[in-house]
Amino acid sequence: MTGKGLLPPPSMLSAFYAAVPDAVLFVDPEGGIVHANPAACRLVGYGLDELQRSQVSGLFRPQDVPRVLGKVAKQDKGSNICGEYRLSRSDGTVLWVDVCAFAFPPEYQGLMGLVLRDITARKEVEADIVTRTKLEAVSTLAGGIAHDWNNILSIILGNLDLAKTRCPPEDPMTPMLQSAHRAAMEARELVFKFLCFARSAMQEVTTVHPGSLAEEACRATLAGKPVTGQVSVENGVWSLKGDPQLLRTVLVNILENARTASPVGGRIQVRIRNVQVDPQDALCRHVKPGSYIRLDIQDEGPGIPADILERVFDPYFSTKPRGTQKGMGMGLSVAWGIVQSHGGHIAVTSQEQGGTTVTLYLPAVPEARSLKAALAEMEGPLRAKILVMDDEPMLRQLAEAVMEHLGYQCETARHGKEAVAKYKEAMDKGEPFDMVILDLTVKGGMGGIPTMAQLLTVDPHVKAVIYTGYSADPILENYRLYGFQGALPKPYAIKDMADMIRRVLGKKEH
Image (cartoon, rainbow, N blue to C red; front, side, top):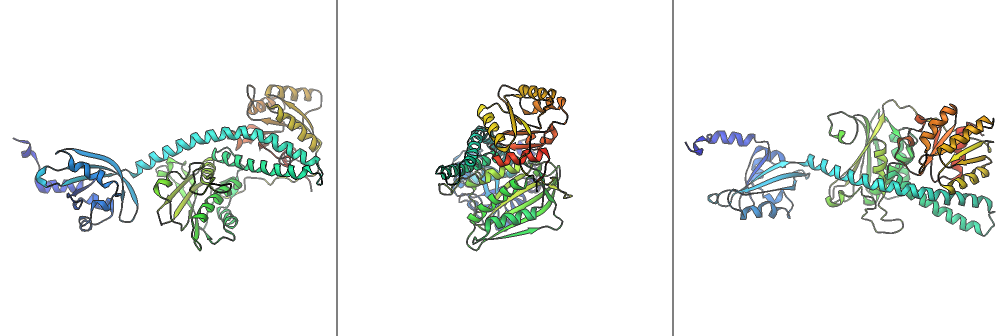
């Protein structure tokens, strides 16, 4: 018996062909679709009659059609060409498909077959892995740079602050000091962007109402602009859990991009609702299961081309002209870093001439209660004795000068071992320190966390603050878990240090 005798009857072949889950198209030499199975109709969104009146060139990008069909037509019988291509559905959405094209024997007069499998989900996962890997590497580099710059800026800003306090307004040096101080503050803002991207910006976690946050961000960004903002909030929407300043930065950056893309008289819509992410949801690739707030920010701009859409989170990538205020390109990179640090997810979808939507998922607090006590206002310099540990000699000198200016007595230590020894010695003399300020990382010595652990064994009631220029360590968000009463980023202004000390020492002013 020959192999042909084993073939099932045509009716059974037809039933099998209809049941195949992959899309199958038969295409004539001119590219016309002569037949398609039900899976193909579902994939492209056309009925069979409509599909059979179509050209295969209408489904793929023009530059891909020769690669899909041209090579196959020149191949010998039985050969096939496979590849991954973009396919356009009837509703305008674009899918990624794995295409296997093959040529029928010569007696079929140039007929070709295409087998298409939807791989969009796989391509999205692959693209996400590539993007995350690239951004993780760059954010690590950015964080390391920010750490070094913050140490330098701490010295510059601190000394400028002190110099300003010692120069009367009429002194000819005062305008120059003020100009230098403004430039240093701009440098600090740039470093702050790097820290946000590196997910290492200091966070003060509290509960935030997303509607109020969005309304305030819209007012700040769109006031006086020829674009209107519309915020719609689902009834009973939960609160967000996070740092309100950083979350505001996210929304302002996104709204600024949307405003730039919008036409005159255009509208930006912000829609806010509750969502529950279950373990089986595709979102679990990005976030943990739980309660989230979803924010969709949609503009009416021209959209983003696919080749650019893949790069929107790249730091310093921008389509804007270069200049002091344009083309800096950190907006969405900063937003990505902040959202990641909050345990959320950010995604951008766009269609050319169809606008762009930025979607945020941020952890929610189903029962909105404030997690942050109001900071105490304080009066006058307090009499206090403070120990500062830092491995940088210039930062120790700056600390002494700042504390003297604030009216405090100050001693310094180079590392944790020396800090513990000085703290213990002061206690034994009956002249204890009122507060300790510890650098998180110390080169070649004991850093802030182990130092704090030893200080707590010496004095369970020790009052201490951790400060640092950069670290991805969770202590920056959860410093209380390690026994600290506060956390302060470098570089700091004198006022920031004064407020922190007074808050920790618990004295109020009018």
